[in-house]
Amino acid sequence: MKKSFTKGLSYGTTSGVITTLGLLIGIGAGTDSRLAALSGIMVIAFADAMSDALGIHISEESESNNPTKSIWLSTAVTFITKLVISLSFIIPVLLFPMTLAIFVAIVWGVILLTILSYRIAQNNKTKPAVVIAEHMSITVVVIIASYYIGTYANKLFQ
Image (cartoon, rainbow, N blue to C red; front, side):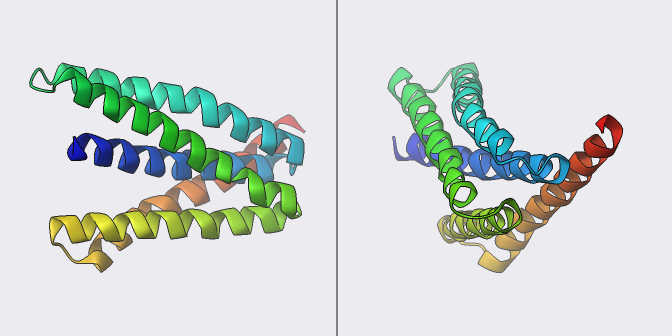
């Protein structure tokens, strides 16, 4: 059961941070609209959390050796974690101007992923710096790509 809980927590946290940061940065670069950012975060928090939870559920079911209780635990933990993590990004958008909100959101996302990466490294008895660097490099790619996609969309549709 611990493995199912950890799987849902890890997946939900990672997806919540990466997806929401990508959306927030892309919307910020494309529109600078607080309303669009808030709406997008709320949609991501629910719809993508359901999608991720179903994805984990089906993935776990495809491995015939997983007990039903374990499958549902991974499903529920993925959904709840993704929902809560995604919704946490609403706070900086409500409190700060968009540019600062995006910066605060990036810092928040990096903190969450660093903690998760460190815990994974500890559990796997590997070097935390290597695991953190690997995960941060992917995060940086998402941040940069999202910014340029938002900027391009702004130029294309303005």
